[in-house]
Length: 221
Ligand code: GRF
Image 1 (cartoon, rainbow, N blue to C red):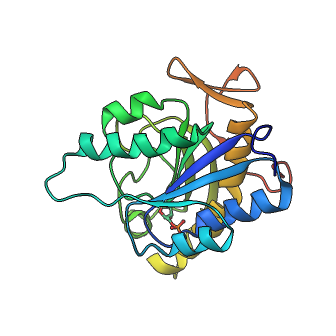
Image 2: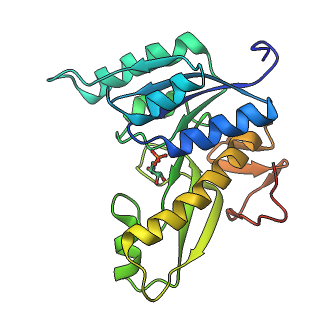
């Protein structure tokens, strides 16, 4: 891969890294982007092994006791700056980011959330969707803005909530969809097919008024 000609990203994780794996698979298959580094805030994150297996540079940045959120995010930014990525991809990074950090990378920072935002921000989304008797649930890729899980959506994938669903079964089906939509959203961002400017999302230079609903027939890599 030629680092100079391909758009690049860094990926931030905290745990399993199954989304990371789907992005690695996409990069390896299509060779249209590079993952310059995987940064974890947890030393034992399984995703670090996935990165190492794919010969991707890994960085660990654990929080030092007593460190403020802003101080941690400054250290995080220092690491990111070494790579000068085109895109910063949050893939199960379980930290709230400071406003300063988010503002610095506005438009270059995306996240995947296991719910159809704006529904079910925060944690335990699958159980909350079941408890709320939702017929549909799913996943959203969105630009990150200072308010948690508030940034504008790019693409969403929906799954039906079944009568006998438990949170684990529903989570599995949603995660499968996450693995499909995250590489698509990343490709769009890196190609600048989708852009976030002045608080608005543009898709093919037209304002995107609602998230794109993932359709496996239309949205292929
Ligand atoms: C995913 O469900 C993602 O939506 C959420 O955290 C989970 C990460 O899973 N933000 P994995 O580490 O990618 O397997």
